[in-house]
Image (cartoon, rainbow, N blue to C red; front, side):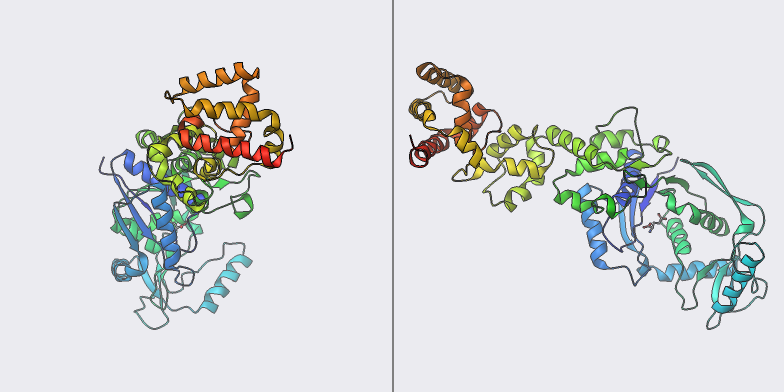
Length: 469
Ligand code: GLU
């Protein structure tokens, strides 16, 4: 088999939405799986709705997902000379012709067809006239009128269309601009695309496209039409179901690895496996396992998968994704051993990077702010003794390890007759401001002796000044 060449051809009329991202991923993973090529093409012929800002937003989202392209980005608006050449080829070969019927006349034909129980279509008035180019003429494709056109779809099986239902559609408007289905075919042929994976909202375009491949003597690509992504209520995914833009998920603290895992699984499966790394997907993604039923976007599942990926990602790989959230909160965080340890205490407790950054606060602030309820419950006069004793022992501790720390706590428990919880909880509030946190010994080890002693002393001062004894 020759090299697989896939493509992603978004229209730059908005951000990259989750459905589009899934299509991009299917094409990208298939190209990577087969060691083929992936082409990026911007379909910007709708100049009213297309913007450079949208194209840039799409590039940005693809880069975040780690989807790189081997060719492009091509812009259709820069390829008009190629489309004109192909129009001429079709005219010269007798597969297209000039038509001078006015829009009003075509409208009348459509009404007539409907009135007589047919499909609204152009009736072929100019088909055999042999008109030459002139102002106001459009170019129409001479579509076969009998027989069938069949899509051999690798997902849906054969889909049969009656040619009698098609009409001679326009490929070039009277102002010289080419039409959508035509440019897609010209691009796919001239870019050597041999595998087209796209949403099944395009199925109805495909018979026209196949007819043009045949007229141009080009080999047909493999078609894989993938069911749409639905919302939980089983209607097509839309803004009503939550964020649509892929980069909104970045801003909500999702890892790109979780997002690609989730999106690829929405419509593709590999046994019961749910968790996939990028490498797994490159190794396993084939067209046979694309499902026939629509995937349902479920935020809870995405969150659960994000939690799994956060946990599975080594700190140094997680750091670049987490850093913007730490900086946004004003923490003086830097890549390094300290942050590695911070991550290791939080990565099993965070469903998103936002949750992780919020929980990391106490590791970075100069002075801990106490949650009022936590302080009221735990920073009480009876905590003064154990806190003071702990400070004393810590200051002279040479073995600053979890084992060394455990020993000190035991000593304080013995000296005060208090259980571990009665000591650990005030310490936790003193160090983190909260009643829930990673393990107390781990925190102490990471914060280091200086910071811990300072925070314990701050808690002692707080009790002495705020709480009457
Ligand atoms: N530009 C089309 C879209 O954004 C894709 C066309 C295609 O895949 O053939 O839906």
